[in-house]
Length: 445
Ligand SMILES: Cc1cc2nc3c(=O)[nH]c(=O)nc-3n(C[C@H](O)[C@H](O)[C@H](O)COP(=O)(O)O)c2cc1C
Image (cartoon, rainbow, N blue to C red):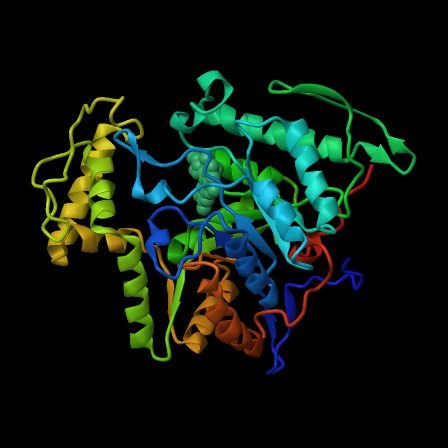
């Protein structure tokens, strides 16, 4: 526990000025491209890949190691696509194993609120909290498509707003269960709402955190409201100017919900590429993108907008002249956006590619690159520090290009620069994930 009673987000740096300190986390796996093709990638189903990455993140004093979760492999026209072929292990099982080879880093499981039940999830997470000595966290996701829902609940699914209604009640119910023990033993819990009517005695006594922190990743109006009312960390995809707006919006909403905006950390996901010179870093970034975006994946990426088979197009050639199919067969093309959205997107991409003289694959490499931090370690450290101090974020969820080694260079070369700037901790502030995040101890009933 953080016994000093001080927040860990602000400290004196080496030049004597007060500066905000950032929070760092690591994500595995990233799944928007086929990064696993990189020859430096370990097997996605080998424990050494997970443990190597988690331990490196811990060496870098990261708040937490986050496992993304995709409960259905990415398919494309009836076959599993290049992106989804690496395997998706069960989250809490992996994290329980990781708890025995790590000592300090938080272990955050992405567990879906749409397809699970509160009792079961609360129990698994409370178990992880015990085994890890209070390092468990929960990334509450709702999943964006009915297609994933086919795996669950008799193929059932929920409209968007209901998914968030269910998620909010899901978290409330889990917290009620976690609070269902006193010093004298279990008391009866009861949750009654439109989504769940559950009661009984919770089977697990409170773990060291009592209530594990919740992370939220979702972007819509309802997603942001859910974050503002229920999340301790918001894992976002917004950087740059859009990130400034996003973070300000989240802080306003948190305050409107009567919560302290300082205690909700906004952490965008970000990739990075390093080098001894900026040029070398840019070359490394490009090489990693080229690995991740195979010629086949580039065509696949376009097909999801066009709703047409484009395999006769040259991946190094220009974008298709033909417009997206307005009414593709939904069985063959199950996850497409609405036709006007796809046409607008296709036109935007065609204009951009022609302006910058890009072929299909080059365009997809740019589209999937996000906004990485690229440069020498000192430049990247300065960029990250400036962004956090400008109010754009409270920290970052780093997405290494490969695992387990993809974080080593960051921890060995960027973390010391951040510490030198006074924008990053030099020791863990406490024992639990709540401590790392600067959250007060959870109320006990
Ligand atoms: C940065 C980010 C990461 C996400 N990671 C996952 C994930 O690992 N698994 C998952 O099922 N959904 C994930 N989601 C999807 C969200 O849970 C949510 O279902 C989706 O964004 C739709 O909600 P929205 O309309 O509020 O954005 C992620 C969303 C964002 C923005």
